[in-house]
Image (cartoon, rainbow, N blue to C red; front, side, top):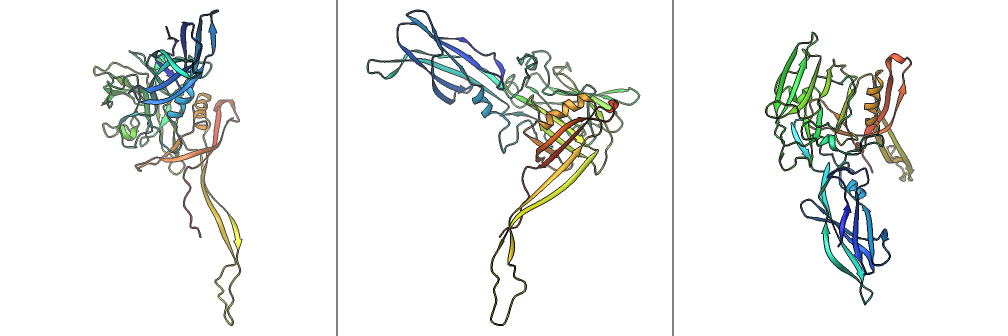
Length: 403
């Protein structure tokens, strides 16, 4: 009897093979193909195709094996996608949301096909349905645990970021998106606020994850935990030097890993804060405040046409030569201060990210930009670690007048 003999884990990364093995079972029929159908968890057909058998065992009757991988299809369906904002990048004034395209639940149906007496393909036996799996746009590097178990742990789960050892710098008017795979028991964001003398103050913000029970272990949630939003609920200002945030249940028990932040002073006129989709499917953020050069370049071609002469008059305002194909490019050249190597590694994720935004203080949207060049170099002395240099440009060119 046909069956799936190998299936992926329930929670998987779409950036690693998501392989199934389907076997015909011992049969005397001349099995030629398996007909594969891929459905989302709601039962909508997403794709269908035929697969040749990979190998067979036995000496007649045979058992036919079909191995296939659906990771490429799922990568194309999940964030990031061109010209669209990922679901974990919230509206600047939003507190919490789930990402519709950060994950996808799917299952597979497979059926054996044989050649009949008329040499046509026909279905043979029952159509077999696989388990439902949930694929996330989370990258696990080759030297890491390849499972997602720590992100869906029932009691204490990892967050979708690789944070620096000594915390992330943030200012009192800036935002940060705390991302994790939905746990339906999350009821609040808890803050530990520290003053310079070590005095601890605890605060919390009630959190209601939309359709939390439905999306438990199935979607990524993002919560705005930075001072920009937190100050709507309590004072998170220069009285404090650092704070930690984690998600908790209604009784205050921690359900997720903490993220630590260092409250730092503003450097007006020299700052540019960037948010980016990170390799975990969450969001990183950093403010460059050492070097910020704003540049504008314009390039064009030219053409020429005859000028018009009258019998006794001539218009001196005519232009024989004129510009065509005018393109304006606006970009920033940024440089960090000397930072530790772990901060440099955190910012390496920014350099490699396909989706980056500028946070505009006081504005109701984030400005999409493109990282054109970037590098991390060793600073002059061992004490200051590394310096990050990069060039970013507007994702949407500014309009210019044309003929």
